[in-house]
Amino acid sequence: MATKPFFRGQLIAIGGNEDKANELVVLKRVIQEVGKAEFNIAIITTASREPEKQAEKYRQAFTTLGASRIEILNIGTRVQANDSSRAKVLENIDLIFLSGGDQLRLTSILGGSNILEVIHNKLETGTLIAGTSAGAAVFSDTMIYEGKSEDGLLKGSVLTTSGFGFVENIVFDTHFMARGRLGRLIQIVTTNPTMMGVGIGEDSGIVLKGDGTVEVIGKGQVIVVDGSDIAHSNIMDIEPGGPIAVENVRIHSLVKGYGYDFKKRRFLTPLPSKE
Amino acid sequence: MATKPFFRGQLIAIGGNEDKANELVVLKRVIQEVGKAEFNIAIITTASREPEKQAEKYRQAFTTLGASRIEILNIGTRVQANDSSRAKVLENIDLIFLSGGDQLRLTSILGGSNILEVIHNKLETGTLIAGTSAGAAVFSDTMIYEGKSEDGLLKGSVLTTSGFGFVENIVFDTHFMARGRLGRLIQIVTTNPTMMGVGIGEDSGIVLKGDGTVEVIGKGQVIVVDGSDIAHSNIMDIEPGGPIAVENVRIHSLVKGYGYDFKKRRFLTPLPSKE
Image 1 (tube, helix red, strand yellow):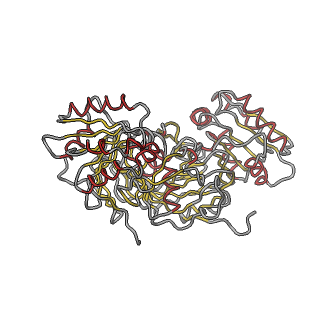
Image 2 (spheres, chains in turn green, purple):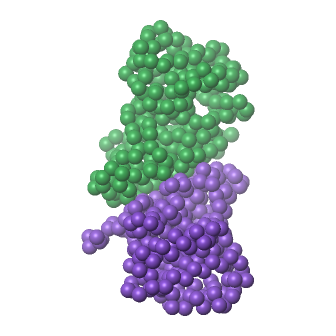
Image 3 (cartoon, chains in turn brown, red):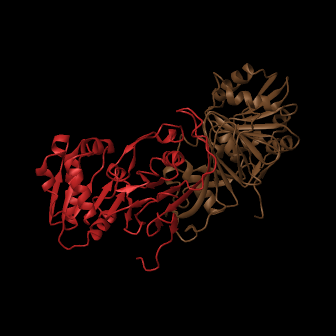
């Protein structure tokens, strides 16, 4: 295949609805990946229409987890997204956390902005970026922003646009088992099997590593949808709204400790050394 | 593989919610498969807690489609299921139609009964049996009767018992895309890849043919879940309630005119001669 799925930098994608008040298993792992005793966090609440509420929950959770400084970036307009004083807040930040809501708010407000460029630069220089729900959906270069689960296999029912492109040729979907979204990812990989689909369950996530592998964390599943074996499909022959036929979509279900190698498209069983 | 999935006789499985008042596409095809100008239908409403309502809708639909005689068999107790006068109604019946509701009503009331034996005999001597929703779920030898979609990949969350066994080693699920049930079938084939999963969409169905192939009818999808390539899974290692990891589940989406060969586990594109 010409283009392999890949990603750069340190990233953690969470499927939404992660525990913020009790065991904090997923968020604890996020902090472990920061890898510093003293660390500063910026929380970007742009995806949400109730940003203060969101900010408060994460402020509490990350305070519990020992953050030295927490900055809330509630950027709600493109003017703010291009305001260099806000971008300056990201200096000396060790973790950028994108909270949930509507991914189309994130891309339409932050897309092409000054602050997104700063975020990209931070990612390339080693800052950890974690996102949950909408905040994880934007990681992809092709981003799903709409599409009813039950219509997932009707042509054109899954609406996509460009995401932030932290990862290439991997499309993230979230709240995956809870909302029965497998049809959406099957449609995506049928339209172009170069893309791989990754459906992340609630209170679960994946830690993306520099070598092209991921490790699953949290209590649920991560589903990988691989279209590289697809033989026949009717996708180019049917009208929008028509039901999609497709042969040979490969599915994997991963749980805590399991992994996936996106370069080799290979399922990874847990390492014996893992806790 | 030691045991191939197979089925006997003439069968049509419908995913529920088929049109009963307008175009009647699926029910029209059922009648075509009866293949007679004059034909008698028995409708078994046992699955439903509102059998009269169900009966009335099907009576109207099948009258529209030209049935000579329609018998309603509202069997609600095991005593009735063993009453030979009710079984006699099935003489000279060309189509036995199992309406929807709760498949556990069908199996717990009709299982091991006189009338079920008569139904089996009728199937073996060429009578067409069609079922929708619960009425299709009972076709399987292993029958799903409970299991929330969102918990489909938690071990033990999909409850099964024996169905009527018209087909062997194929597990039918219905209302499939509408209720996001793919996780349920992935769990089933992970527990034993001898079984194949078939998820039938609403207002859609499959016509099962004597040669081990099926043809898809109606407006939606039929999803085939094939576990024969499964490599790793954790199903024997985790406790009930734990999330299932599984490598290499093969999925096909079939639409109207497409088929599947269950003996060869092969996807079939539409025949050029099909309308």
